[in-house]
Image (cartoon, rainbow, N blue to C red; front, side, top):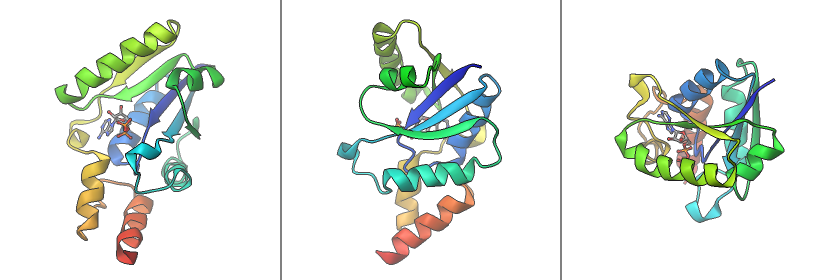
Length: 160
Ligand code: ADP
């Protein structure tokens, strides 16, 4: 049984994240999608809301476990007996930061490899902050995120 963890903010989960999760599932038996608890980022959705949206959006995917963590990704990977950390690479702009993180994680945990997965081209322009921004102006984002997320965004901004 091989396990990978897929850490991120997922604020909120998008179709690009889901594409990466399904690719990771073709390589690993279990993928722990784990939401970073990083209050410094001032997230739009709480940890529980983000986890719930991931759970609902991956309900038909076998082998997904949803978790959350604080602290170091490598410590969290060890807790789950993960052999790999999954990260998505959309463009060269992602590369520099991801490369530094991967090398630093490898210094701390030489036996855990970072695996980069590229999403389908249709998702390379997607990121959660752009989704939050356009949804805040009342724009329909249902082409980019799962239905549950589109609804949550709508009710979040309708209320504000
Ligand atoms: P973080 O705040 O850690 O970047 P995100 O939730 O934005 O967290 O992203 C988690 C991971 O998913 C990162 O590796 C990021 O590059 C990747 N990712 C985000 N959006 C996409 C996308 N549209 N396609 C592929 N990978 C993506």
